[in-house]
Amino acid sequence: MSANLNQTNIEIDDPNFRAVFHNLQGNILKGHGREHSRHLFFALRGDARQNRQAIRQLAEKVTSALDQHQQQMSFKQTGQAHLFVNLMLSAGGYQQLDIDPQDWPDDPAFRAGMKDLQTPFDTLPRGDHTPTANPLNDDIRQWETGFQGRIDGMLLLALGGVDAEHAEQVLEAEIQALQHTCGDTLDIVLIQRGHVMRNDKGQVIEHFGFVDGVSNPKFLFSDLNEEFRNGGYSRNDPSAPLNLVLTKDPGGDADSYGSYVVYRKLQQNIKGFWDHLTLLANHLSETSPTQVDAEYAGALCVGRFKDGTPISEQGNDGWSNLFNNFNYDEDVDGLRCPLHAHTRKTNPRGDTVRQFNSPPTIERSRRIVRRGISYGDTELNPTQEWTDAGLLFLCLQASIVDQFIFMQHTWCNNAGFVRQGTGIDPLVGQSPADTAPAPQQWRAKWSNPNADTTEFSFAGFVRNRGGEYFFMPSLDFLRQLAPPQGA
Image (cartoon, rainbow, N blue to C red; front, side):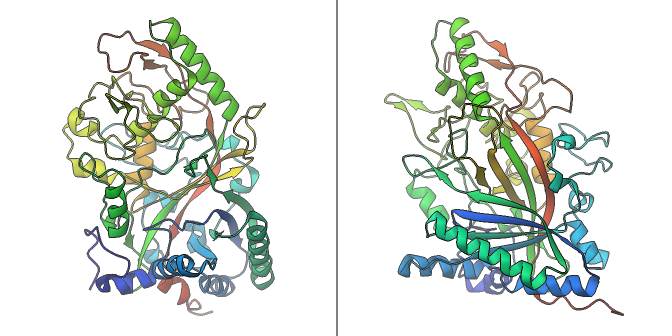
C-alpha cells in the first residue's frame, strides 16, 4: 500500500513510514547539515550494461533518509563525522541507462532539460510561457562550458564536523576512488566545491551577507517543534505535507519515492549589489524627508535585514526578529515590505489569496525546499565586481513546472505580480535576454500610506552560470538496476 503523502508533522522513525524512508534518499526531508561539499556532474560513456553497473556501484554509497538520521544521532553522541552522498539523474541519464520511457519521471521540464527552448509550460494564471525562450529567461550564452554539454547525473558528496583541510582530503580521496572504480564508464565533466558561510552569530549566510534558508518548509515533528520554540507559528504555518517534495518513483516498488531537483550555479556580483544599494539609499534619501542607508535599502530588496529580521515587522521596541512567524495580512499594499521584495515574491504569505482569490492551499503548494550551499571566495567586501563567488542553488519539489518554474517565471520574473507595476524580484528576477527590466516602486518611509514613491531599477546582480533538472530516485531503483534485456 502506498504511503499517505498528505501527512506532515511525522517523525523519521515513524514505523508507518519506515519502508519509505529506508528507500528514500537523505537531504530531501531535512538538510544533510554538512559544511563542505563536492558536486560531481558526470556523463555516462559506456553501453547500457556498463552504465547500469556504474550507477549500481555509486548507489551503494548513497545515504538514505534513515541513514542520515542515524548518522546525525551518532555525531551528537560521539562526534564521529560521516560522509553524506546523494545521487541524481537527468533525463539524459535515464536515456543512457536505456530505461523504458514509461519508467521515467514524467515532469515535462525534467524530460526537456534546463537548456530547452522548445517546450511550452502552463504557468497560468499569471503568465503563460511560450517556447520562444527558456522559461526562466536564462541567457544560456553566459553558461560555463561544463554545463553546456551533456550531463547525465550528479553525485553530491558532503562532510561536516571536521576542519576544512581534513574535509578537503576526505572528499578528494572519495573523488579519486570514484574515478578509479568507474572512470572507464563515468566521465566527470564538472566539479563544484561548496562551503557553508556563517556570520558572527553563527547563522548561515550567502555572499550578500544575508541569513539564508530561514523559511524552508518543515515536514518532521522535531523540526516543527524547534520552529515553535523559536517564535511559534501563530501567523505562519511552516509545516508541509510530504507531497510537496515527494513523488512516486515510477521505476521502483510500492515504497519507492523520489524528488525532482533544480540545480543552478548562481554567481553574485557582491560589490555591484552593495554599490547599487548605496545609490538606492541616496536616491530615497534625496526624494523624501527620511534618511536611509544601504542596510535598510538591502532590507527593502530582500524583505529581511541581514540577520533575518523581516522588514514587515516593527514594534514599540524596534524591529521584531520573528524570523518566520509573520505574514502580510497587515501590509496588503506593501507599505512595510515592498511587493517586489525577494522573500515576498517567492513566498507571498497570502498575497495571492487576497489579490486573486486563490485558495491558500494552491499558494502553499508552490513552495520549494532549498538545499543550496555557497561557493567560491569568502570575501564579502571585494574590490572587484563579479568575483568567483555565489550560490550553488539546489531545490527539491514534487513538480518542477508547478513549483520552481511557476515561482521563477510567474512570480519572480513577472513585473505584474502581485500587482501591475510591481516589478521583478530585485535578487533573482530575470528579464528576457537583452531586455532591460522596468523599474520598481520604492518608498523610504516605513508603513506610511502618504509617503511618496519613487522609481528605481534594481536587478542583474545574480546570474545563472549553468544548471540542470534532475530526479533523485529511490534507492530501490538505483540498487536493483538489472542489465537491459538482450544485453
